[in-house]
Image (tube, rainbow, N blue to C red):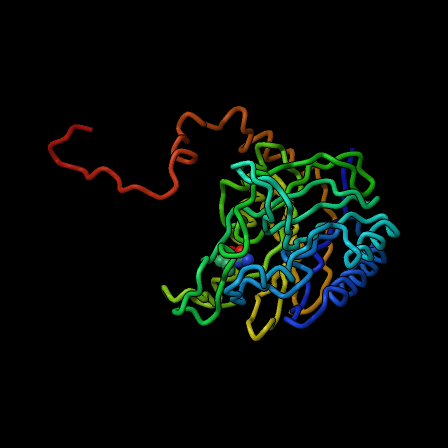
Length: 331
Ligand code: CDV
């Protein structure tokens, strides 16, 4: 029996620093209307979709950045998105900056800031929340950089792991769905933790500049998109799943984000790709039964994985130097 869902990446063009949330939400509602006309059942919006990518802006006093954060989801400002989704019976994924009143590891309840995404069902229920684990960038103002990337200043590392939920979506009783946020897509461990929970569809939002802004070294312009696609295609192939990967694109606050949103199948093939730097909807029919081929053959984890040899993956963070070969030592 076929298990088909029509999914879409709703790419957003730039959101400038002064653009209010109401405008961003209005643009997303219009994309949901377009999705409805095209028979889409699940729409994926980008990372930090309600505002500009504010980690490029330095606030000496971190509380001055609070204006970029949401204290509730849904809220009065995001309600139109939830209403539209309910009206059309479409599920959606939304990335946003979350401010939570929550206990930390010491038990102290305080304001905690996360780079978060939620998966919302067609009836408006929040099905799953994820908080970004791999935070790129730096915590202090970096004088060597032309553009700051202060995710490590404004966000804590996610504390929800890499969850997967099985929930109804579109016409299907249950789809196994998980999320990654931007830089997470470059880390095979993140995909594998989702794969180990039989994920069938990964929703992924990103904001990636066209240029490597770190002063450390040169990275050819054309390789930026290549590395993004390579990571997502490998993640899908090696974990037998679909991904809907959605960008923010275009010149935002004077900085170019490369767009190139894609939908990828479990063979690692790109089945839809955005061509603009604007608000754009790309859709694809995702036959979830395609996930079975990989997971019953080459990537049948239960038969072929060797966790006894993977200790370094969880046992260390940085790389160590290897033993140096010596002619006299037997091998
Ligand atoms: N928002 C991101 O996580 N951006 C990162 C950085 C390194 C550009 C990315 O991996 O795309």
